[in-house]
Image (cartoon, rainbow, N blue to C red; front, top):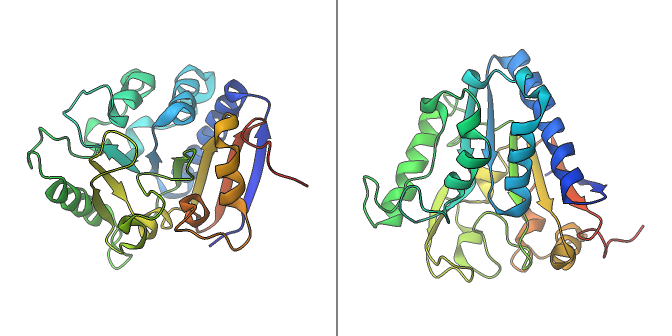
Length: 251
């Protein structure tokens, strides 16, 4: 796994604008090199702020939106269109405002989807979609260009919470029940899938995230205590923070 780099911005607004600009560049570069690009989105305050900043950025025209594959790192297992779903927030902030190809926007199944109220079946359905999009012989998931993750106050990422079995699951996608953060039922990528990304960006803003950020960056951190410490990219790992979230870092 790559050693993380830390970039600190004055506040959430500047963090979101800077991350959006960086995302334009990464997507455009990937499309120039390989014809298409893939991103994995996250919810939460910082993740949604980045998407809103991207929607407002004049440079968004540099992205070939019809050649962009959109995935999610986790999802609340709620009905389609529910306000708690990460997909709903992403559509409102960005996806409804840009010419993405609907067939390339791969939302995680909803609880009123084809699998009904069965999160295990829904997780396997998403895993099958990832396998179908992966390069032949290249593993169970695509090599994502950028995978964004929020960092929770307890240092969770995606829906991988401290001390929970999903931290050690080798399947690409898992159902998460009894989440300590509501809603209790979720679907999440696992560490092997997160680590398939070329770049992993961990986003955190606010003083409530400071301890989690410190744990996520600590040398030899216990991933079972601080899942953020286990989220690393193949080529690059970035912690994109505001000053408050970085307040417990030293040096």
